[in-house]
Image (tube, rainbow, N blue to C red):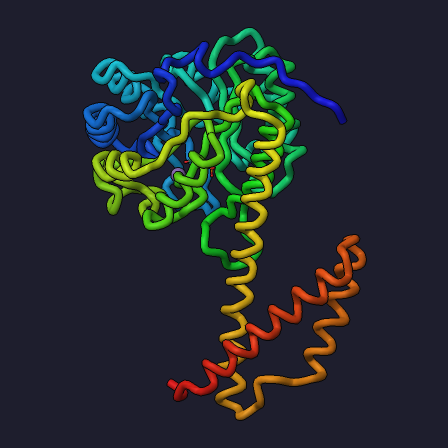
Length: 364
Ligand code: PEP
Ligand code: MN
């Protein structure tokens, strides 16, 4: 289905002096002091343009901290007054929108758990008719680009033109390095379909832990994202939600300082189709290597098992089975048979080398 979005450029509703937009702030507004102090420290660091906070928190299980609700909205007014910075919160129903507007919240976002539901999205879109407030739409929790596009379209048709997307990654079916898998090609596809749509990276919710924030943030910058939304709390360890992934305002400043930010951005006239395709290739190749690395760590597990059970590394039947099944899979994907054959011979050879290495180590 062909689609288009009629949206205004990011620079028409927020001034970032040509730099990527940075939205920073705690996962949740907990107390007035926590909010004001976190925001003041972020302001003093000088990198952020907007302060974020969660007021209504969509939690997976009941009993977790579900946000302070309306009581937190006056604190955000204080934040605005004391820092002079605009504030952004998540809204999930029309009542949230009404209250957010009543208290002068400047930017709204729709959370991943809301984007999945077209009924919810349509209710929000109806509530935004005739309202001039910027809106950012997080990707749905499941990796469904059409659902993400559908939500953007519903808002756009309701007249929201100060519109952007937040890429926060997708729920994992299996254990994964990241709390939410980035699946970069989905966001790249969105950007390719709608070059004028601003994309904001949310490395916090992709990472789930501080140690992974830098690589994800750098990756978003390498993809020329238009901005970042990152969680920052005056005392992350004591945060009432998402403690493991938040940074102090100072640590966030240090991390952002380390980033390598390129000048070109997606959608600019001088960026040719060729470059866009090359970026996609780079990312697919990187994923290819990440898959290979994951395969090698399984090989190590097999090797340990074989060593402890005194089984030989090379088993001819298994090798034949690998070549045959992969040939079939490759065939069904229209891949050149020689490529698949050579590739798996190489992969298998490396696997034998690795297994031999592990099997010659003494069992732990
Ligand atoms: C958040 O931004 O704090 C949040 C709840 O995010 P998400 O909707 O991406 O899970
Ligand atoms: Mn959070």
